[in-house]
Amino acid sequence: MKPGGFRISQRIRSHRTEIADRIADAVRRALPEYRAFPRALVASAVGIDLDLFAELLAADRAPTAADAQRSLDVARARAQAGISVAVFLDSLNVARREALRLVDEMATEVRVSPRERRRVEHALADWIGMLMVQAARAFLEISRGESGAERQRAALLRSLLAGELDADVRGRAALFGLRPEGRYRAFAARPGRAETPADLAYAVAKSGSRGSESSVVAEIGDRVVGLVIDRPGLSTPDAVLGLGPPVPLGDLSHSYAQASRALAGAIVAGRSGIVTLGDVALESAMLEDPARSDDLVARYVAPLGRDASAERILETVESWLEHGASVQAVADRLDVHPNTVRYRLQVYRDRTGEELDGFEMRCAAWWALRWWRVRQEEARGMPQPETIPRSTASS
Image 1: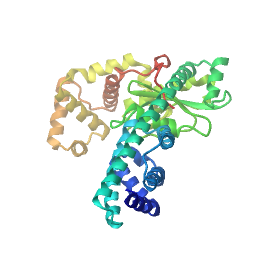
Image 2 (image 1 turned 30 degrees about the vertical axis):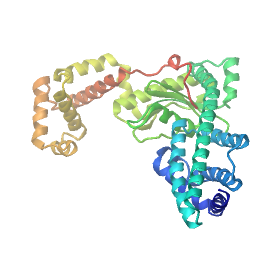
Image 3 (image 1 turned 180 degrees about the vertical axis):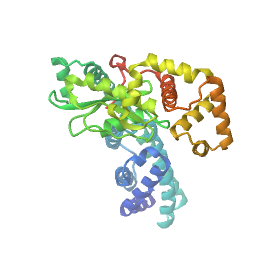
Image 4 (image 1 turned 135 degrees about the vertical axis):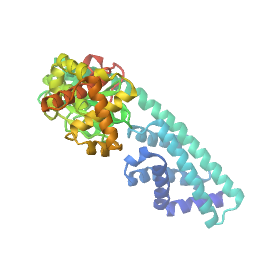
């Protein structure tokens, strides 16, 4: 194989940048997770693998223990970059397919015989196989190492959001770069429809840190809570995050209380993005007197029942209230005929006995509809510090 393999190895070395870019582009097209990384960074990682493979071809030898160790070091770096093992293994398969196409092209260009071409392809398969084995080993090592760190983060977060700051908590906080004299913001968040809590936790932790000071973030069911140093970014536009005011470490329980109320108020208001308590003051007021709000729901919402037609009628009434009682505006928004809007409004009046013909009555109906929607969300509850899992957290 030496003549053919050697010529292809020389081709890889002389066109290293072009080949690395091509494989990197194939990986980024196939796997959305890799698009979060700059193209040059992905191509640089591919280039490292190309160098090792070209070295094997030039020497006409199988991978050694030293080669395996070098591959393990590369895999560890990728595991630490936040890529899951499944995605990394998928990237190797994509790279293998693209590399086979490149081998065919190069074999034709440098006039490698079919027999030698097959030997190069087999060598490539062996090489990718070794990378997969080392990747699995690296990710297993990382996950085992992180499990202890996750427990530490979760325990620290429970203490801080509960307002504890004794010597032990201060010592554990220092391990994460948190300073007693520093100022931090607690938050409570709900992911968008197309993302998981883990996606949101990663985005908040990454954007909310500063230098050596790390955000401390945990997933609780379908919510994400924690503390950040800087105002964080969100991974999707429909995610919502209630953000508390900046406070010293010892006062994080107060910041978290405001963050939780802000999130609840944002859900009432149908808001998305980053929200503070001041942004949803009216909606938060609903939460202060739930009994009065429940009375309004009983009067303005409950008579409709709970079937699909009731939901359509309530949606129409809510839109009508928000669009200044304009039938045409509601018809345009809901993509229905204006007469359909009029019919639904009349059904609402008939079932509730409310005419909605005065400002105060319309405000009460709007309040009732908003509170009814938050009651639907409320079944899931706001995360409390003591509910933070003892074995799952992220930062």
